[in-house]
Image (cartoon, rainbow, N blue to C red):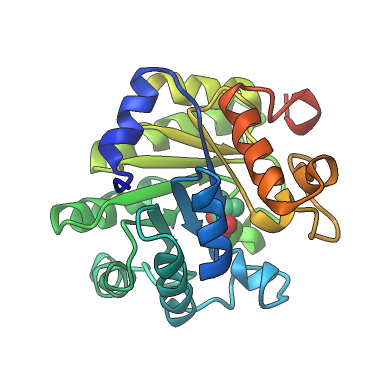
Length: 263
Ligand code: KIV
């Protein structure tokens, strides 16, 4: 086995080959996902909702993410692991370095931060100090109380243009991957085409370079799943086939379909 790297992901973007990513929180699922060919996993702060039962991701701590990153790394030694920086763990560039170091020591290959141009100095500082960064734009769940709920972002011209500007600035700061959540398909395509770095969508249509899904959404465990989610277990009948089906449908562009997308 060969470890997955950013070089491989950049090559996939160049070749216009789509890739599937999924959240993972423990060693058993991480192993199963890796066995089905999922090479990129996210230790998401969505664990606050999926594992801890909270309404938001806000209660999640750095220690929580460290613990789950260790578990996932044990189950998937060759996967490219992105670990979420939880709420308020990157409020200043200095604080972000201290907390990112904990996630990298736990086995992450990259850390993910939510937000726009205010993160320029943070991302620059992290990348200059050898911490690869994934940015997260669009619906940023840690800002749910500012956004007034879990809503599609970038629907009007002004906010769409702001998202495009943010994406370009964050790439300039050194961001190597971008997650775009809950934005219209056309906007996701514009951003994906403008950036050199791979863009991973969730609720952003099928024109991005990759997709990510919360594992509980992909396996039909979430009680009220979002519109963009698909229960792959329903059709596949068992978890291994469900994950393979998810990967196949992302790679051939059939997931997400129109019914999972915003226009
Ligand atoms: O925490 C998470 O799982 C995420 C995904 C929704 C992208 O950030």
